[in-house]
Amino acid sequence: MSDAETTIATYRVTLAMPLRQVSLCFLMREQQVMLAMKKRGWGVGKWNGAGGKPEPGETIEETALRETWEEIGVVGRQPALVATLNFYFPYVPVESNWNQQVCVYLLRMWDGEPAESEEMAPRWFDVDRLPLDAMWADARLWLPRMLRGERLTADFLYDATGEGVEAYRITP
Image: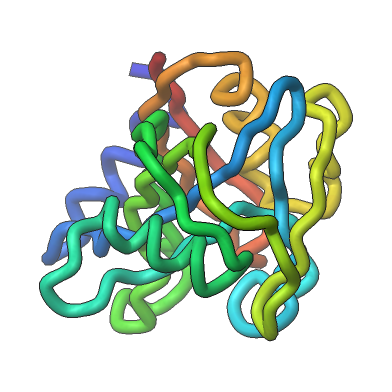
C-alpha cells in the first residue's frame, strides 16, 4: 500500500457514518465541456460542473438532473455515471459534513440552452484548455482523464487549508 493509500485508509476508519452523496454533472459536446463559475456558497469563484445535495426521496441521478436544471437551465437526458469521487477533509470537524462522495455524470443530450443563474455562470471550454488553476485542486488529477473517456473511482484527502490535496488514489 502506498503512503497516500495508507493515509486515506487511516482517516476513513475514523468516520462513524458513510459519506453523504452529492452529484456533479458536466455537459459535453464534441471536444468541449460545460463548466460553470460558482457565484455563491461553497466553492465560490471556482469553475465546476452543476451539482449538489439530494432532496428527500431523490436518487443521486435525479439530483444531478434537478441541479443541472436549477443551476444552468437545461433538462438533461440519459446521464452517464462516469466517476465516483470520495473527498475527505480530516482537518474540518466531521459534524461540518464536508466529507462526501461525489457521483459524477456526463450529459451528451439535453433540452434548452445553458444560461446563467443566481448560483452559476456557465461557459464552454475545449477539453484541452481547462481552467484547472481556477478549479478545486483535485480537478487537475481526475477531470482530464474522465473527459478522455476513463471511468474513475478516486479518493482525495484535503490538507489543513482545505484548498490542497494532501493524498490521493485514483483507479480506472
